[in-house]
Image (cartoon, rainbow, N blue to C red; front, top):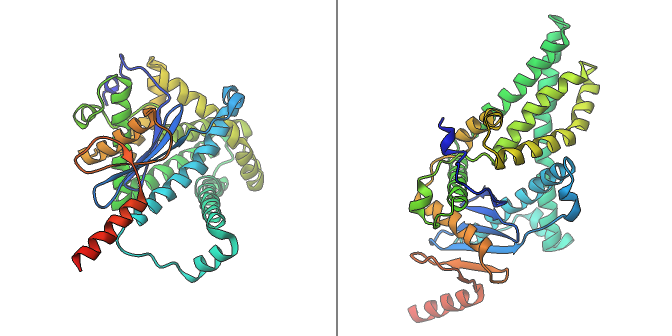
Length: 345
């Protein structure tokens, strides 16, 4: 791994960041956040909104890490669901809601149903994460007490098993076609941010030269979480199974806060200590990012440009073969389609 291509000496770190979604990318700038999605007809749909701020709380070390972690979990899930919804809107096949959806929409309304789906997804994701990566490793390693009472080895094996489970899980899902495309968009996000931070014109040709790995990636944040948890758990000894689960859960905000500070440091520094600490996360990014094609780079570039656009927030589009944002007008599109149908008849 050539770290000089990742920690670029002449780059100017920014607060621009993003997330890969279904057939697109969410880009978050200081003032605007944009969701860019490639529709089945080749059009890029871009939705922009004001970037949410938390004021003085985001200036307090450790606290800001907990806030950022919670926000990324909820907003990330919301963005992923929104990208799927946009793709569904652009699909010619009409979606037929099930009985439960019809009942829930009548009971809670469209917005209420959306919030139920959103927070249910977040709760399920948390339950899965806690069950697989916290409870399962400490429960399995508890069986080792039949062979050793060493607090060091019990904690060491638990931490190693937790990291191994996470890496195997990510590696396994990377072979799913839909997830692989998301990982390609993840690579496009990193290449485009590298291009932007190096002051080059945003184009597929310029972005293509950069690596798919970035020191400020959320994947690296997750790896920092696992590594810091690995170290912190040694301080807790090896109490009963129930106490281990409780203390590990209570320690999560502290670990998230420390991991966030470490990620911010890695994003603005290229000294040897930062490079060494970043290596596990960068190697994991080799799984969570894949080489994108130019059409994916175009979507990432559209997202960055939308974040920097001076126009007000709203919905925009880039037609195939064009590179300019134009206002999205679904009503006009529907009327045009109706006229075409009438002319055909």
